[in-house]
Amino acid sequence: MCQRASALYLGASSTYISRAMHGFSYRNGSLYCEDVELAALAGEYGTPLYVYSAATILDHYRRLDTALAGVDHEVAYAVKANSNLAVLRLLAVEGAGFDIVSGGELFRVIQAGGDPAHCTFAGVGKTRREIVYALEQGIYSFNVESEEELRYINEVAGELAVIAPVAVRVNPNVDAKTHKYISTGKSENKFGVDITDIAGLYARASKELPNIRLRGLQMHIGSQLTSIAPFIEAVDKVAPLARQLKECHGIEFWSIGGGIGIIYKEALASGSAHWWENQAEPERPLTIEQYGAELVPRLKDLGLKILVEPGRFIVGNAGVLLTRCLYAKQGAAKTFRIVDAGMNDLIRPALYEGHHEIVPLLQPATDARIVMDVVGPICESGDFFCQNRELPDFKPGDYIALMSAGAYGFAMASNYNSRPLPAEVLVDGATACVVRQRQSLRDLIAGEC
Ligand SMILES: *Cc1c(COP(=O)(O)O)cnc(C)c1O
Picture 1 (cartoon, rainbow, N blue to C red):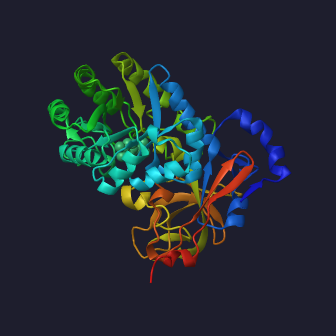
Picture 2 (cartoon, rainbow, N blue to C red):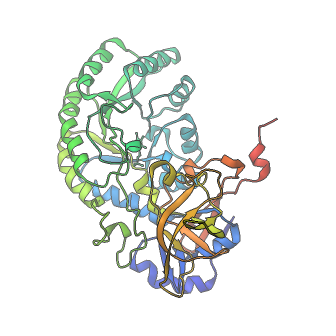
């Protein structure tokens, strides 16, 4: 279900592409994703609607790949951020590996043409069925989160008469300085094995667990890190251990995890090729070039293959959620705009106090702004996209975009309040494809009786 944009859009696009890879910008007062007008997509496919920019996804992947060029490495995209098959296929064709957290994600990667031999399987609660499936498919490594899990994988591999490749996730006890719900590298988090216990665990495993191969070491200290310091601290803290495990156990890789933060504020700041590079932007502490420049010298002499597991960085700024205003409501204390997307479609504001810029698809004629709450239709007071924010006024029938919704957006969407899941569209140049149909009412009750 693909369509080419009209010749009018194509005509307007020629200077745009050469200027920047930045996926979303206004042209003649109308917001575009690459060469496709978003208001046209909203009209054609309805709202709420997720729209992704293929060029932006690939640009992010390539920039990270380039930033790590000085060291033997692989970019393993964290599937959980956005697991649409078309997004996975785009990255598989580009040569990405994949970091998965469930058997379902492995199935998706395989369906999208990804290679299980380039998949790492993370997560604290892998089930027997998932372990068996991953062994059958020949994944690159299980990233193991406890000794109990390591012993269980050894047992299952023994039953199947195969050797399971594993890496243990080290918890380096570093403060990622991010939201508490997405911090994972402190001792009090449920993730990984304490750094002081790792060497002993590898020694025991190599003696007692014949059906596993100690292939690597893994860590991941948190998500949406907006400063380089915690990455440096974690790498410096764990590097001697990685070196030691290579010498003693012949491990071949070290995954330093994902977590590279993105700019959520002022997503349409003008004048920068990539909005997260806007120098004036206060939320812009970390660039991908800085990430590479600081970490590559610390990693390149280890003689290990370095994996990174970015999710948000690849897809976050590459997606928007389009929604339409249903009602303008003047409450006793507040001004509300009620839109047709809800927290079931995009839960980040409710779950993590996540910020999404809100912009109209058609630029208003004046600069006038009013203070409002933009809320959804769900029966929860947490169902808001912003509170007390100064925004250009918009009215029932107008479309707005929630920016930077490409990561942990659709992937966390649910049917709460019996709302069908929104459709997803992938834009590539002047082509827009529906890569997931909007759910029907029938879909809502499929499997029930
Ligand atoms: C979620 C997760 C990632 C990706 O995190 P981002 O912040 O999206 O880059 C990487 N590795 C592991 C183990 C994860 O759980």
